Length: 412
Image (cartoon, rainbow, N blue to C red):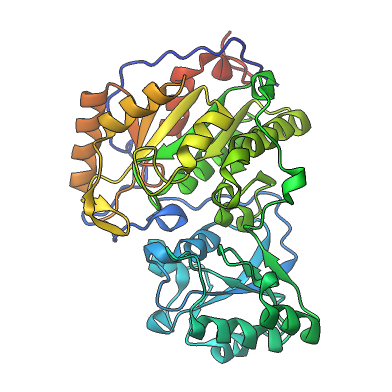
């Protein structure tokens, strides 16, 4: 393990770069990029040594490929826990889910309804995953009927909403009657077991990097996942700590759905989770998934992440073509420079790079945005999904040179 102590943050001048000769280039016009794990991708996220034993279909009626379908989008892009057989969305029925998300077929069909989905598999799936993340966090009446019907057919349920279905008498009774389980992903541990902040985070001597953003549903988890995979691929041991329901459903070994934990315990629960990851895995670096945005008045989770994780560094995710905050069409997006100032004022940390969500941008617009922000901010800028992983790695190595020096064969 490469232990970096004390942490050294050494930003260096950086210019956004076009893909090198021979690398995959973006088309002149990009598909409308989607948040989280649904962004247009020039490469496929790796799934090394993953043994998915549970099968699942994902319910995402009317939302697959859209912002509120981010749980389904994320699971199609990356799942370590479930073998996804199909997605239910009648508005996209007959299409390949991979083609919808990034223009690359993955063999996972989008189906018209439950009967259509079941007709395309030889055995009954183990789970129905509710793949939407509506702002309300609640099931509609029509969605309730779909979930109950799945239970009636013998499928267990994975529920990432704020509404805990095990607490609903109708769902609880259906679970008993049909001998199926309901997994309420967001349910926190009992209050008597919740942990307060203790300061033990400072015993975690490896670099802690948080991937934060200027808005919700902007691709923080995707960038964190790509960065973690890239670090592991070159021989560094990186652990991703999830902070939302989708990452937990995807199979994150360490994480907590912070937006369902009482505020008094949010920092402590995250701190304890990071300490556990450090003690159990002895990683070279820990990546922490962000939630919301520090400047967003509707969400407080980022403040708890900064307090509980005490990150040594932050990578900031931004969507230049997004004029208004997601679900708040009168609230203008912040300028990245302002968000950086706010983050660095609020916490003892430093923003080491900017990553771009290229939704509604063509290739030329993306290049211009990367060049402009690199010049204005004086930090590395990249797009985690359309530029080589090496750009992300360079961003991290510029801030933590000891990580690169600790690689096998690296010059000392």
